[in-house]
Image 1 (cartoon, each protein chain N blue to C red):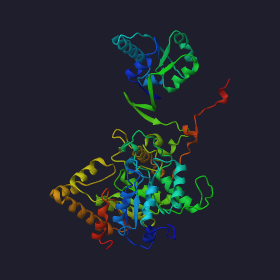
Image 2: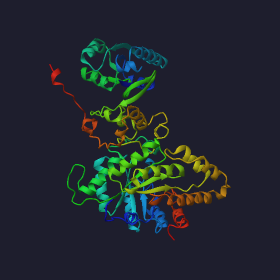
Image 3: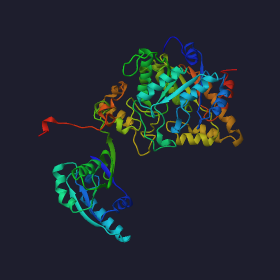
Amino acid sequence: MTTESVSQLQKVLSEGGFAVTAECGPPRGANAEVLRKKAETIKGYADAVNVTDNQTAIVRMSSIAASVHLLNIGLEPVMQMVVRDRNRIALQSDILGAWSLGIRNILCLSGDHQIFGSQPDALNVFDIDSMNLVRMVKEMREEGKDMSGFDLNEPPRMFIGAAANPFADPFEYRVIRLAKKIDAGVDFIQTQCVYNMDRFIEWMRLAREEGLTEKVYILPGVTPLKSAGMAKYMAKNVAGMDVPESLIKRMEGVPKDKTVAEGLKICQETIEQLRGIKGVSGIHIMAIGWEEKVAEIVKTAGLRS
Amino acid sequence: MIVGEQKPIKEIKESLLPYGKVLILGCGTCVKTCFAGGEDEVAVLASALRLAFKKDGGRIEIEELTIERQCENEFIQEAAPSIARNDVVLSLACGAGVQDIAKSFADMPVLPGINTTFIGIQERSGVFTEECSGCGNCELAYFGGICPITRCSKKLLNGPCGGSQNGICEVNPDTECAWQLIIDRLTRLGQLDNLKVYVPPKNWVTSNSGGPRKLIREDHII
């Protein structure tokens, strides 16, 4: 972890505060107005906002451009960057460009496979993996060089994030992978949505045992459920998502007009529990297509007034 | 072996329409083993084409021949007399075989009859799986003999992504997660420490990314 903070997110985390990050998906078109409107509702309720990079392999406004739109309205972006669409040359070039535009946080990801998107006929890249992307950004920052060893006229000094999924298999390997990402140079981790609290607690216990929570800030992800249908869909169709049967039952147990409230209640309870886990440094709220709820979630959880 | 799959008969028939006399040329090595282009497949395809043309009132003369390999000049020359008396060659070899025939007979049109799919193995009778991408720099020693470049959908070199569930890859329920296989195998070999080792970015120079490749064996050049 670098000593001097380059971003608000890094400042909050390094000062021991409980960070809040949210997520904002760029539009499927060239008009940024929708993005600005969604982002305005988050303003004041999150330290930084993740800007997704063609998530689910569907073409959207680029994460760099969308990040700049957020900067322009006074929000700090966490620019997501996937290795699916760009080779190492393009990745490095875009990181230099992003830094020059004022982007200070990056989240390094593999990216959803294009088979899930609207253009499955596309060629993918995967020149380097997400682990090596982390290392690349770290080396640009620390050594001031690109991958060829060339001295950069100004290094991008990004605050580096990566994802972790405590719910994917093989479970025993998940902590080893986290350790590898830390070695590669990651400063903060945002996790897959936590629904299976027992498994998350176990993963955190193993991470603490390895001393990893001393080396990295961990921000578990939460996503409010809208309905029992959504819970079932995620349990069945979203790879790496673990929604326990008990949670689905709970959502099914309330009248249709009360499911939204119930989903938000579950979200509150989850945040409350997560705050109590040693080694958790903040929370990452992924209210997919429901950004206007972020403020309410943050307020009710007592994270901001 | 190189695994291939015969093209749909409709596509083959359409590609033959401009021609009167066709040689269906089989290849007796890889594509024979995967039931795509050996002697048997040549015979079946020839019958099917004769029937199809007859049904539409079209005319075609078909000659059948299978040589040992379409990627080796010694065998290719065996086909020269048959090729000379036809208007077109429908090659049931892999893409390399089709191109070698085209190179050897400059004035003869050559059409592909199969789609070359991958370098793979016969997992069990009738089931073939891709195992190798021919990247030119084999790193199987690090991965317990399982290739993540070929068998992980995202070519991950440093462990499984978040989409591995119950040993299955998120991309396709019929695909095993290569990283689960690697971890299982390294566990059995007592080499789990390999998993902690950082694997640097792949150098793709030796792969097709470095341009079409040529291998020169000076000791075999006459």
